[in-house]
Length: 433
Image 1 (cartoon, rainbow, N blue to C red):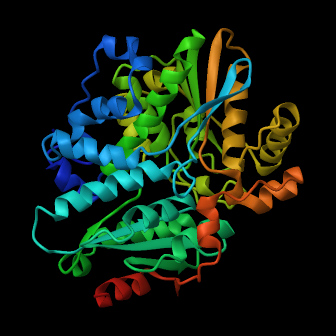
Image 2: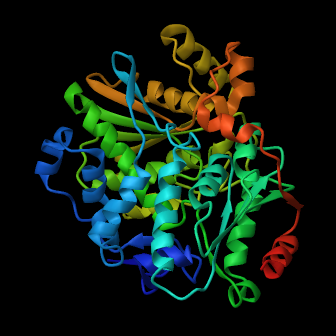
């Protein structure tokens, strides 16, 4: 299968080429040329299939030209070595926990899948080194750093906004060393993302360095996220009710992958994109006008995105038809006060400790379900609450137990280079050996 640029369908690439390039030469995001639904029998018997079997069947059509079946199964075995449970917290509400991986965030699967793909590709090509250049608003950095740590032929450069990620998130992306470099940017996530996109179009850099991105703009980071929704459907199928997913959304890669799962045939009634006050998409869903804006810092920092890259993929999935999209997607925004109140409500009524991102997802789900009987809703818990310890302690007067994954990085020494301009990034990339 080939992938084409959403800027110009004439610009195509194989899966391997798209992964290594990250973004098309015209700055467009790559998109699969087709999505072939899985047979109905797959979903009829999904509860009898292992997560590995489900993932292999779902992703194979997109990668098979470049990743042989045996290699793909080996990669998925390494990637999917932890659980993805749906936890019931109310009669018609569950939460899909995506934080049981090595960095305790949902991005572990995509980062590890991409790292393993690049590792496989590097064994079958020349010794040309690849530089993974990535911006993070929180969890991407740690997941990418962990996933790519020690991968031969790959260097990783992570840009993150100074003072706008949690202390634990910063530890996860700045303490590993080896082939991982962290750049602390004086600015917002949008500034980091703009620098990354500019570097990909800078001939001075691309003529001397082979760059790729590990943000969800990269197809190998983005597509594996569809696994979560299939794993959740496997567990929720027995409920017998229509299924709704509410996804805390920042760059919109996760919910977009869920919509690909729907295109593969997964029965789902509706998607809810729940955001914090960075409400570009909720406003679009009201007005049919896309108006990006500077991002605003919130307690759900991984969603502090004012111009979500993947929303163009979502619009493309529905032929850029607003009415068609509206039948499948609702989007609501919530401020920090509402987020904290939701955290308190969940904890008081169920004893469950939600992180601020999950709380936003819960709020979006509750708003949608208010007039939707016979519906079972799942909100995604995208990160362990320990990663937002200050917010959880301040809001709930509760301290979650420290998981082993987090204990490992807490004593690490921070190593980060401070920059504030694109020219500083360019200088660093050109001087790096």
